[in-house]
Length: 310
Image (cartoon, rainbow, N blue to C red; front, side, top):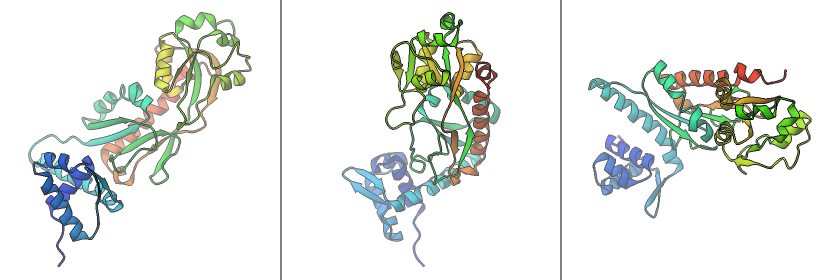
């Protein structure tokens, strides 16, 4: 009968793969780095599969290692949960949520308390990052992205959005007369950078509104974050083109006002991607329903419709 890898060996592999370091894994498991190395070498000999590339002082997972890691991590999480329950400790599900940086910095972080209040405490890791994201390496459970980027995992379209011209209330006097007076305001631009999707520009907006800008359409402030551009507008530094999902709340509470009924629909939808390894977990299913509702409520806000054309 072939010898099976030991539980200690599998634990050593999981810790080293997750942390990317034998030394860190050794510290976590209270053994020496040499012991970690030996345990992993034994597993490699028993399975006939090389699990790590050793590059100087770093370790990088091979394809075989990448295949093993997600299942082992989930297995050890389950063992930990059972141990805590047997020991009488309160169970707190773990959830890794990945969203675009602008959504993590304000929009979602301000709403997470609502999820916890309605669904109970959870150990949530909120990651603000650009696409593509390393689902398996970072054990991401759910990813919200602009556009369908991940064909290798189940992905669903959850909402369609548009951009709205908005500014602080103190600037509204300059635009009450007619829509073309928007061209008189300082403009705040959003540029997601060379690797990001194209964001509607003020030039596109002026064309859609049938307005001839008075001066270069690129004048004014610029930010590479939708959230930063929105904050600049709230501070009264000019008018911005903001996604409905971000600006709805500011329009509802009066920190921003709509500057025009002209809107531009975004080319791609907001999408949710959930790997199969996570889809059946109760906390993931609950977060999915909650997040979809939050996004759809924002893009469907009456405050947005009040300033948009049919």
